[in-house]
Image 1: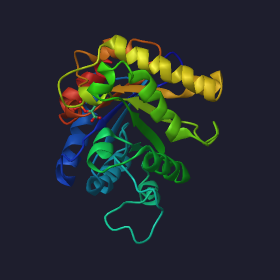
Image 2: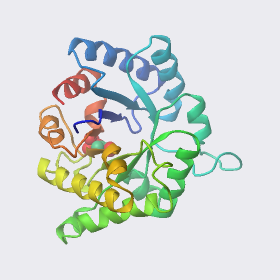
Image 3: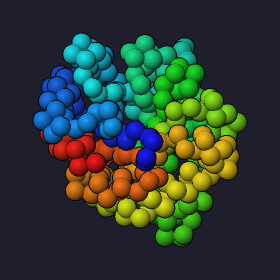
Image 4: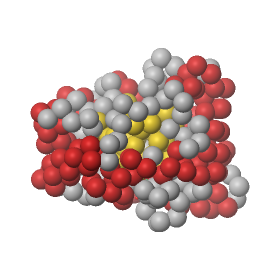
Length: 258
Ligand code: PEP
């Protein structure tokens, strides 16, 4: 990760209401200062529930806090009769930088196929949001030794038909399903192996220049005491953090450790 800015993104999942969001982001900003996290070198982002985003925007922009924010999902559609969905256009209007696309919990509990994920990725790009595309295998797939082929095929299906220009800025998070919320972390070696495989495939699909700009994150039970080893590899440009991002003081110490 020599020329790429490290990204530490906190996926709050369905935790923290809009009042808790305000105090969490406020405390996170203080703690980042306290830990002297160099926000030029290490970008910190939070991904709160939709109902929190307006409050988070008001606080971050009002106080000029060095924290980026975004959504955890978006609709594949832009507007209309899609009850319960949220458009990328609305996230853009709230000045979101990022949006998670294809998180394994969306794939598993909301039947998001690779086709749906590809449509959502396009929706994010249409609305000038940086997609954090999540990919990663189940335990069975890993035990069968198919984890690299499986994960690369998820990447390929998501970006199929899109040009390097259209995908500029894309972030990909390798999140092995068996390591999410389980306390089970892939080894730094496993994370590096997959990130290198993804970067190599991007180079084959596009070119080395493009592949070199894409940030590849690892996600799955990342904590303060394992983050440094994980991001030490050249191909790993940060982490997508679930549980350990909810407490602002410990998320700041994780950012410092990275
Ligand atoms: C996630 O769901 O994106 C994640 C990485 O969760 P956790 O850190 O809690 O394993």
